[in-house]
Length: 368
Image (cartoon, rainbow, N blue to C red; front, top):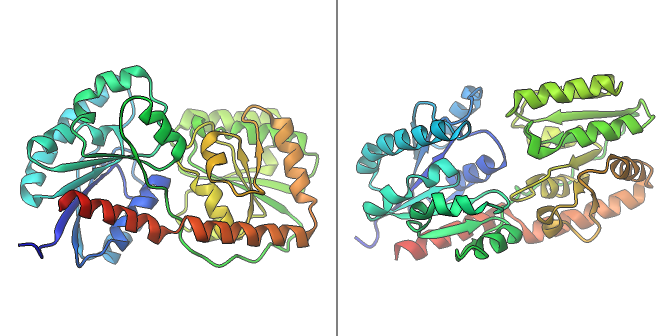
C-alpha cells in the first residue's frame, strides 16, 4: 500500500492561455511519474482556439489522463460565475469518484469553488494564487468556506504572500520556474524590434507602450504585441489609440504563439508594462534568452528583477520613451555583459526543475 502512486488532480481553465498555464504544463510534464499519477480537468473557461497544440501536448504526455468539460466561465457577471461554480461542482463529482485523487491542485477563483466539496470527500486541496494577492475584504468574506477548506495556500511571489498573510492566511511561497536555455544571438538588422509579450488585457497596460512610441521619432523602431486577446474591447481601443497618435504603421498585434524562443529571437528589447503581476515570467524569460527588458515599477517586478534591471512608472510614457532610447543607444559590449549577468542570475535562482521539485515536496508532505 505504501508504494502506491499518489494521485494528483489539476484543474485548469485551459491548457494554453497564459503564464500560469505554462507553469502547470511543466508540472504535468516533469513530475516524477514513478511516484505520482497525474490527472487534468480542463474546464474550458476561456475561448479556445488552441486545439492543435493541445492535442500535441496530450500526445507528448501519454501517461497523463485529461478530461475536458463544457465551457465554464471564469469572467463575466457574478450570476454567471456562480452558475459556473455550481455546474463545475456537479461535473467534478463523478470525476472525483472515478479518479479518487489524493491531492487536488487549483489556481483560479472558479477552481477554488470546488475546495469545500473536495474537503467533504477527504481530499487535500492546494490553491496556487497566480496574481498579486491584493483582494478586497469581500473576497475573504464571500469565499470563507472555500478558503477554510484548503490544505495549503501557495503564492508565487513574496509581495502576494505578504498580502495574503495580512488577511490571516498562512500562505507559502513557491516561485515560478523558467525553462533553461542558452543565450540567443543578438539581432543584426537595422530595425529595432520591441516586443511586448502578454495577453491583451487592461491589467497588462499596453497603451503606455503606444503612447511612448508616439514620442519616439525613429521609424526604425517597431513594436509587436504578442498574446491572446482576452479583452476585444481593449484591443479595439489600442488600435484606435495607435491610429490617433499616428504610429499604427510601427505597431503590430501579432497572433498568439507558443514558440517562446521565436518571440525572443526576433526581438531587441522586451517591455513588461503591467499594472499588476502575480509573478514576472516575462522578465525572467528575457534574462534566460538574452534580451534586456524594461519593466513597470510594481512590487512583483522589483522583487525578481536583477541588480541592473531598469524600471519605469506605469503612468509615465515619457519615462518609458527615455529608457527605450537609452537601451537602444547602449554600446554592444555593455549590453552583452548585462545579458550574461542576467542569464546567470535567472539560472541560479529560478529554474523550472526547482519549481517542480518544490511542488513534489509539498505533495509528499500532504500525503504522508
